[in-house]
Image 1 (cartoon, rainbow, N blue to C red):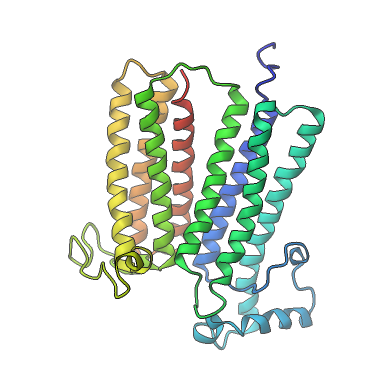
Image 2 (spheres, helix red, strand yellow; image 1 turned 45 degrees about the horizontal axis):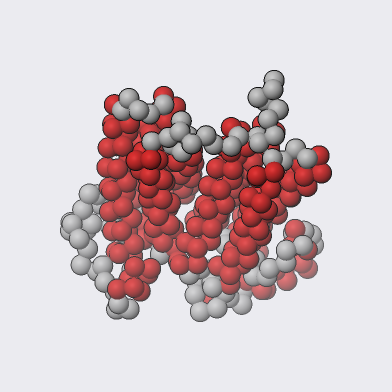
Length: 344
């Protein structure tokens, strides 16, 4: 009982943070589905407070539809869409934004309560404050992303989509790490530096691969080069460099972003498998750490297989959503592994 009541840890705080991380996971998956259904530009205004209320009358619906009809996506892609079809894409985006608001409340209200009751470990107060700021910043970045698709484009800018996802995943990782800290308490300096560095490197590689996946999604690059392991019969696609130059290609060339995503997937698979074998054989690692290395390798393998299936079937909604969910789960496992590797 004494260890449970240590002031440097709190299991209720850990449960709260893990639950919030789960909500972020739901946000990522719902955001991916919103993009896949072409719904992300259906709400053309950012109203953080009043926007929680959807249109409640025919007049309000027509006003929202009129706003949508002014943007390029309607004029160039969805011209002729009727109101019923517009409502279908509107509800996806509205649900995504509503979940974002609920996520903010789900974090802020318990944060205040834990502070008032002095149940939040002192060393975690500043971390939780940063998490709250990151959550608010994510809302601003989300609107910045949407704004890129309202003029001159029919979709959001891929680099802004990657930024939006990247910030969400940073928040997700930070929530999981802080929850682990709340669960176990302050770390004791007893770990293997070489393995700790390897685990952190693996987590960083998973994060980078997730951002490359966002560029594939933002450029709709999963709809071309649907053969594997080659790309249209080529090892290296001839269209890798686009007219805009190398930097532009890295962000906007369909061939480049898909090739990069494939290449890093191979590197990640090899790294995860090699580290899992080495960790399994190492007498210097704790059993939980060895299990986490192996679990990460298994998840990476499953995720790679799912990615290949998604590509070869031209990215259907269900497989694409599962692939994005899988990426978040791999990142969660790699995060816990990186955290655990810092300890005995």
